[in-house]
Image 1 (spheres, each protein chain N blue to C red):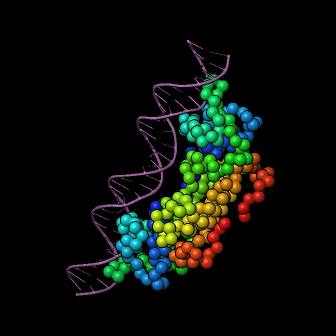
Image 2 (image 1 turned 30 degrees about the horizontal axis):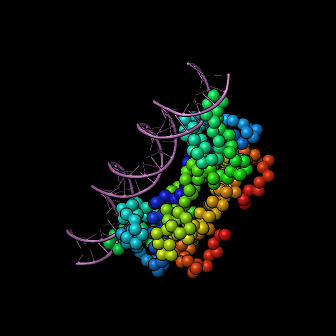
Image 3 (image 1 turned 180 degrees about the vertical axis):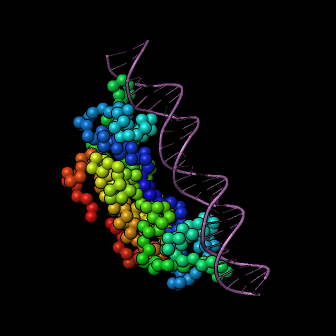
Length: 144
Length: 144
DNA sequence: AAAATACAAGACAAATTTTATCTTAATTCG
DNA sequence: CGAATTAAGATAAAATTTGTCTTGTATTTT
């Protein structure tokens, strides 16, 4: 019951980028170094992020990655789902009606409900929030 | 980002038990058959549940498992944590203050907050809820 | 007492997923 | 051209999950 290391790296990488002036082109090498992650792995991860359209990649000597969306529009849920795949708490709850025997399955609707709460939580924070946050400085109201 | 098959089996097994009259002693063999799970695996799972004190085990000819707590007092979070271990969304959020560099870490407090919402969701349902639920019959108000 | 039944415990193993690494391209800049 | 950087995909090591199997222990029945 956790996000993968890859998602953690992805978020840390995006947060690192979000702290730079908008439009800054970042090298994977730098992103990796500043997030304590293996460069080759981070490279793979950013490839996936680029393919999803979240960031833009530039090949070549002055290449690198930039945001393709505003950091405040990129939710944690989006990143996690791009890297780890859809958030599905239990195999019987792929989406609203994919359980083999919905209506007969004891646990389907409960998991669906719990899953909704989780995705809501994951959607409540953006990369910008993560980038801006320092204890006591963040204006975001944390849940009680 | 999901619970393990083992936790799914555990919950289904407990829900099966919860539908029987209180105090009924159940065999792993029956529990497994009625939840479409491998008996030997379910046996392992119930061993763990017994060790945790959630259920009571009896050895011998008339042996089996009974609840050691009321199904309405057993939350989904309890079961998941017994089987899968503590719910920790990200490695830097083991508990309130275990991140290596809290205060310096960009993501610690955000994940802590998201994790709180998840554990709250997991605590909002009990085995009794799962056992009682049928679409439209459950009196539990689902989240919107 | 012996036999049958059911859980306990732990070793073992197969399958899957995660976490990478490496190599070979393709592209861009100077 | 040559250096720098990402793209893509094959490969592989490590960890986790998902089981199985065997042996032992306790209980009940005969």
